[in-house]
Length: 419
Image (cartoon, rainbow, N blue to C red; front, side):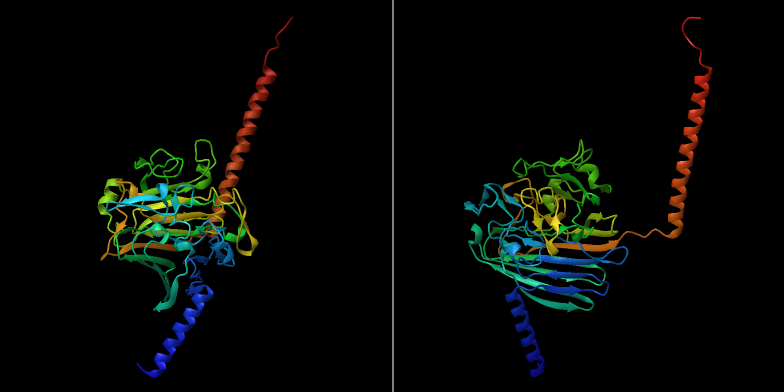
């Protein structure tokens, strides 16, 4: 290696180390106008800008302009990489290899998303890289033995890779020096209308490739059973407008906050296929969501067996949340699609194994693919307009005929009474 190349590498490494220390975002861009801002704090997706159907740059994720709300508990995990165990552990307790472990509880008696100071509140070391036309950032966090009560020193890495084909590929990995439960997840809140609109996501169309959910108790802990989604509001296999099922009679008054068993798998099949975080070697299609307002579409692929779909029913309920540019996010103002193992798997024998052991690597690959709904051409718009006109003409004709018939009947009707 020449002295000049060595010098450039040293300078580049020093600059990126300084960037990590300042907690400034790593910015990834592609040639199609997509831009992702990734913070070293919490490995957070702070901004995600994609073109709308009209070509307008649109930030589609909820978040904050500065670090304070991420650090002080204001943020409900906006954009964060959560762990060491994402989702819930009942009573913040589990048994592993004959020993009882008590991890930190941060939701009453439950441990949620890794505890009081999980991976979402840690500083990750990162560096950017490029692969041809693709750009990425790799972030790494060393979790010591006993952190938040978990056994074993664990090394976690996440790679965000923005591709020229409009995908943000998120590759999560972990290795450990002692047996420990692991379940990493990306917890971004999306609003495909644009976060600046302060609108709800109830106008979004959603489809989820799943035949079962894992029903929960009132503490949101899975019962260990598997419930078919057929003939319930949880059946989203066909594209469904969220407003049809949320806050409607016979629907879900509080919205969605449930783990789906993906790919049509049964619980038993998911358990059999699970191998250190994944049931597939390559991501399989799981979700499609779109906004008719902007035309923006999000497709989600994953190697994981489960997906927590959350429609933001608790957002801003107790305390209003003001995000980027001072936008006040409403209830149902964002949705999350968290690819994962099933919640409380460490305590549920019927669920896929969540234990990682030394010598093995945990993996969870999630892909977000962005696009737009097709534009209607002029002919289509004219035909739709003509259809509307024909319907109105037919309605007027029917009403006129009905009125005339009834008028003639009234004129010919006999009078009753004394003669």
